[in-house]
Length: 79
Image 1 (cartoon, rainbow, N blue to C red):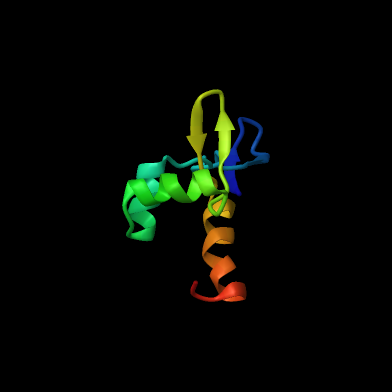
Image 2 (cartoon, one colour; image 1 turned 60 degrees about the vertical axis):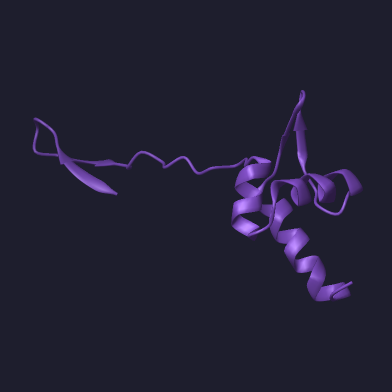
C-alpha cells in the first residue's frame, strides 16, 4: 500500500492499481510457447488432447489449459 498525505495531516492508504494479467491466448501464442507448429496445436485441440475455451467462433487457451496438457504427459508418459 502507498501512503498519501491529506490536507488535515491524516495519512490515507491508497492501494496500487491492480495489474491486468493475460487470461486467454491464441493458437499461435500457444504454439510458440510449446515450441511446436500452429497446425499441431489445432490438431491437438480438435482431438480433445489440448483443452480450449470457445468464445463464439474464437478458440482461446488459458494458462490452466496449457499446463494441464503438459502435465498430462507426467501421468501417461510419451505415446
